[in-house]
Amino acid sequence: MAFAVGSFITLYGLSRSVHENVERSFDEHGTDLTVKRRGIAEPFGGTIPQEIIPEIKKIPGVEDVAGQLLTFAATDNDDNVLAVGWSPDSFYWTGAPLKAGRIPKPDETKVALVGSEIARTMGKTVGDDITLLGEKFKIVGLTDYHSIINRNQVIVKLEDLQELTFRTGAVTFLSIKLENPGDQAEADRVSQAVEALDKLTVSPSEGMLRNDSLFGLLTAVSSAMAWVALFMGVLMVLNTLLMAVLERTREIGILSALGWSKERIMLALVIEGFILSAVGSVVGILLGVAGSKFLSSIPSIGRYVAVEPTIPLIAITAIAAVVLGVLGSFYPAWVATRASPAEALERA
Amino acid sequence: MTSSHLLQLEHVNHTFDAGRIVALRDVNLDFGEGESVAILGASGSGKTTLILVMCGIRTPTSGVLRWRGEPISTLRQWTDLRRTEIGIVFQDFNLFSTLTAAENVEVAMFGSGASTAERKRRVEEALDTVGLARRATHLPQELSGGERQRVAIARSIINNPKLILADEPTGNLDSKNAAAILDLMFDLQRARGSTLIMVSHAPDQARRCARHVNMKDGQVVDQTFAPARRMRRLREPSRTRLSQSQAPARAIHPHHPRRGVCRRQLHHALRLVAQCA
Image (tube, rainbow over all chains, first blue to last red; front, side, top):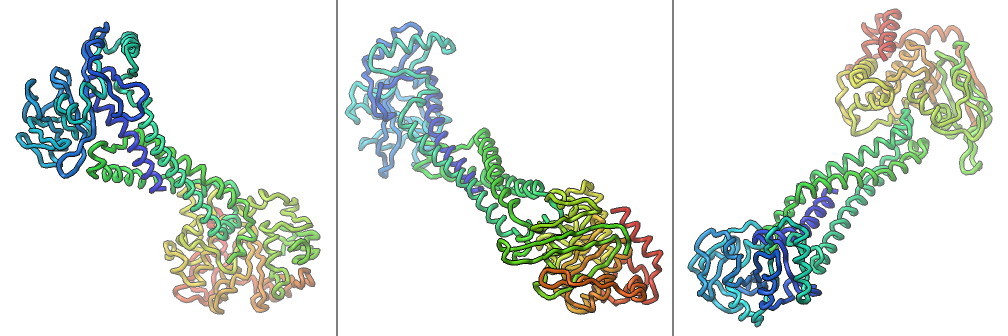
């Protein structure tokens, strides 16, 4: 049960973390709506022409629009990092928290802002060079974002990245700032207006992955694995109790001989199931938290997601494990009460 | 023997293997309050089956069992009787290996409605009665065979039952321990006025009972009663010496047993135990 709960927390936490980290990375840029190419399953696969930005800016209710190009790019030591391209006039720059250095000047090229985590793991600092897609970029600043994705991204000028990825004039996402972010009717109007311009999909930034098929698939697979792990744990509890009942038939016979009613024997076994599940849940939570921290500490995983089991996830998992464990103990308990005390006592 | 009926068996039959094996055949017996009865017979004569039928652990194929004149037919009735009125002592003790002596005794009290403090007090008294107060926290495997059986006896009397059924209680003990256990059981039976029905195939042990029920091939072939002279002697407290490790029950032997235990004191002490229980 402990391993099942631990696996569930880690796997489910992983799937949730992917979502939460991506969405948090958008939140940190202060965007209200995110525009993607309609129908593209890959999150970074679609492109949107830059020339649509002025048209969107004209839509009533839109305060500002910025585009960003994203790609996983090979860097020093053949490591992959998330490379992000921002246009010089993008509002992204003004919101970028700096740990060291400065924002690139409008006329600079081949310069980069490096996330604090990637700077730490690669041993880079302001003034060093970092290689992206075979080109050297000068690090002019280190960013200090909260989300794990933003801490692990390298920000360069949009034109530089477009040139290196052969996507001139294209961006991956557009971010829209609304004049009245709290006005849902206005947000809906803007969304409809943007979608009418081209084959685009607009979604609130906090829910942009909700309809993303790739993330949906990832979530479905990891959630399914998590649930399978939890049910395996319940089956283990059931099996353990069933074995315990079969091995302790004689003891159950003695209890019956001492005047324990079937209900009392059943209750004792269900309580045993509860204790097994509860102890398993507590140990599993510890394992899950430890497993999550371990996963986050692996560079290839921790670079993109911080697997952080939340309190609600832990609480729901523990409650589910205990409830399923108790339910799972009913069958062995029922088997126990079916045993004839005489035959039980005669067993050596 | 008293005249009041405690347990009656009327035309009781019990078969195994779809009737191919007959374990009990038309058994008719009547047990009164305060009796001591030995059930004798060779192996396979039906003694143990009879004991199991008399406490409801086995349901007879046919026949009627009555408790104080009332027919007992449901498992629930038997469960209640075993919890409150019938104590059972097994040949192989049947203690829980993971529980201490005190916990093994206490386990028979769950469902009695007694509070934790009450259970603890009565367990201490019961263990004291069987001379195991100092061994309360020991696991069964840390006790000798005789001590284990005394734990089982303490467990059987913890609910102050009217009937004690003992299935070869000394079968796994050496002669010295066997004598001590029998002393304890008969002293308790006399002091509490309970009925003791004991399975045995040792005639010298059976002689300590007032009535002998002889069985053969599942049938009661005859019953004999001890002569009045021997009955008087049987009513006297036991004189078997117990070793230091088998310290005699203080409530039963408050003084040196060879110098004679005052029966009044003995009964007074045990009545106190019974009242408390």
